[in-house]
Structure formats: C-alpha cells, structure tokens
Length: 163
Image (cartoon, rainbow, N blue to C red; front, side):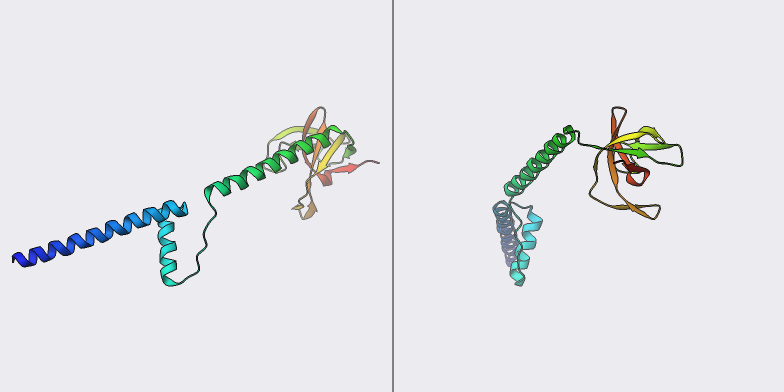
C-alpha cells in the first residue's frame, strides 16, 4: 500500500510541477507578446497545429497610430473652422410646404432641433456633408447652414441655392 501512495504522490507532484512550468511559460509569453494569456495560449496552440500566426501590433504602436489620427482630425477641424471664417458662403432660400424648416444640432433626423426656420427665409450655406442618404425616397445630403446667428443642419432638398 505504501508503494502505491508514494507512486501516486510522485505522479501528482510531477503533474503539478508540469502545470506550474506551463503556467509560468504562458505568463512569460504573454508578457513577451504583450497580450492577455488566453490569446497567447491560442497562439501557442496554433503554432503547435502548424497554423499561421497573426501577431497583433504592440500597444505602443497602436497608441502612436491613434495619436497620429487624432492629430489629423484636429488639423482638419482647424482647417474647417478657417474655411467657415472666409465667409464665402452661398445664400439659400428655404422652401418648405409645412411653414418651417427644422434646423438640427447634428446631421441626423434624431438630433435635437436648435431652430425652426420660416419658409421663404434666407440662410447662409456653410458646407454640405460628403455622404448622401435617402429621405422619403429622395437622394440628398445634409447641409450646414447659419440662420439668425444659429448654426445647424438642414436637409438640402428643402433649400434652394441662390445665384
């Protein structure tokens, strides 16, 4: 009986030792690849199976990419504000059957209404959105306008550009 216990204890000790070594190896690889352990384990299993491995970029390189894109966005915002200051806006006449045109905070139907522009009023067209959408079966885009010191978005088919 004692031999069985000793043999059982030795096997259990080796199994625990191997689990410890595997765990430490996995943790080391996780640190090296800068990924969470479960993704590192997937990489190891793929390597054992002979599958190709896609190594994700490091956290630092992803942060650098995000910072570059943020700088580009900030630069474009500054350029847009400069273009708005040029005041080379076109005038447009509001043309709606309902009596008033809703000026929205953002170029979305669900966006809040910041002003109601009366029919036959003039607005300054700041610029048009670059994306086209369909509203009531008609293709169009949002237009950023200024009316009575308020800026917002209106649907382009409800205004007529003046020469």
